[in-house]
Length: 270
Image 1 (tube, rainbow, N blue to C red):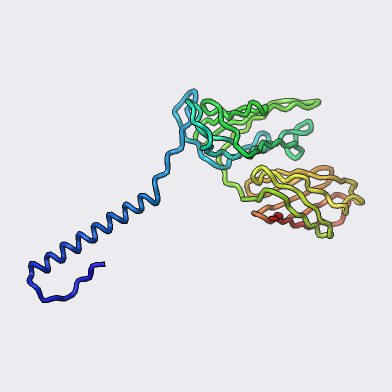
Image 2 (image 1 turned 90 degrees about the vertical axis):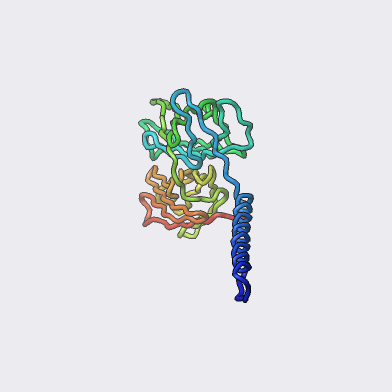
């Protein structure tokens, strides 16, 4: 730092010191700005999707959610920089796709089967915003910066139809993937698994405590919503869970059984 000291000199010399001080400050400012530009370069603009009709758009990256007849669907839209840019095909991909479909007729959103598409690499988009999921029996496309469609056909013994989800960006509560340990207030303990970017909890084992009073046993899978909530209701058994990062709390109730069981779960980090 240039420090001006009180000196007894000619006025012309003092003026020269002031000019030198101004030059030094300007040089330091320019150097600082140049350094900042090197340290924090401008981020490149993400590629645009060019639809068959309408103007190009840059879709919102991250979590997307939608429902069709009460059945949920969710995926993560990411910029897939590992892929080579091709004409009409921007470098985006879809990962951690989970969709719920009817399991019984007539369709009831509390009775569902789930499908999950998840892997080491995202599934690449097709031409002009097509979601590129035909190989998985799914249709749909990005239609705007914050809008997309997802389509799936289902066929059961006495009913069949096509579900169309209208997808939009959303913010999901973080839920850790991997193995979880579950503790019931009855003292029983078991494990289950979370996958699909925190979207699906699978193989949650019902405790033996309800077998004698309700008769139902086995495991259940539950979709985890944007707020970390998951629920199951079937055959007189109701399970409700609330996830937050690596912890979860909830209750399990069963018709014919005394009071609900409390439960807690933690993500196994090992």
